[in-house]
Image 1: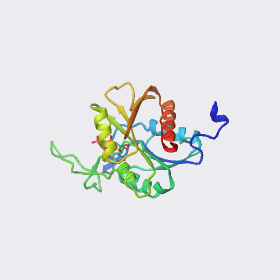
Image 2 (image 1 turned 90 degrees about the horizontal axis):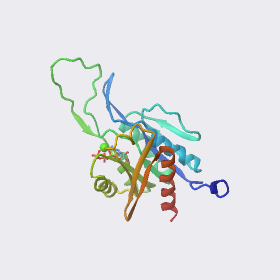
Image 3 (image 1 turned 45 degrees about the vertical axis):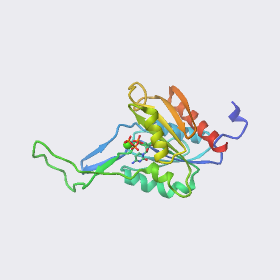
Image 4 (image 1 turned 120 degrees about the vertical axis):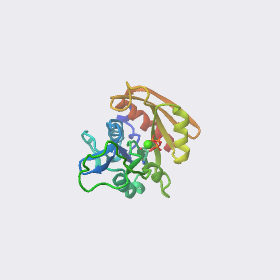
Length: 222
Ligand code: CTP
Ligand code: CA
């Protein structure tokens, strides 16, 4: 109830987020992508707006309504997501990379529909740019938070990403538990930073979003 009286925790702050999957075209009718409902990213955008922040949400193709007060930019591919994010970086104090960005794109997108012929075919793929790492290595960088979906060795991989991408914080979810995460309405996270960590146990994504943003706000103002 405190928030009705005192200033909201993210008042005067601006938050930039990525959410949802990206889609990488193979030809005019096909693509490769990742499982991602976008629910966690949209919950974070809503929570940030509720906590008083100005919010910009760069979203891949998802079927979700834009939360009230959130300014949304729709993109499809990882390259489009990068192009939408980078010009915004300096205007925001917090960046949260929640999108399930496709790690690879098709080397040469076919201009017309590929017809089936041989029993086997190969697609050549090339690495996509890392949006989160690009934000984190920007000269005038925001407080930068990543996500890590892991099936095993969660702490080791999450801490590896935290240091390799030079992040301030990383929120890891164990996707080997199929009841939570991905398309679910609830999720659990373990959050790591350079000299600490905390568990956010399974709860609905809207509550979890508020808890994660509270943690971020406390780290920034400390
Ligand atoms: N990410 C990104 N751009 C990419 C790949 C990932 O911004 N091209 C971000 C995701 O939004 C997430 C974080 O990086 O916040 C970690 O994504 P993840 O797929 O777990 O890590 P990767 O570095 O891609 O490593 P891997 O998939 O091999 O585990
Ligand atoms: Ca990846």
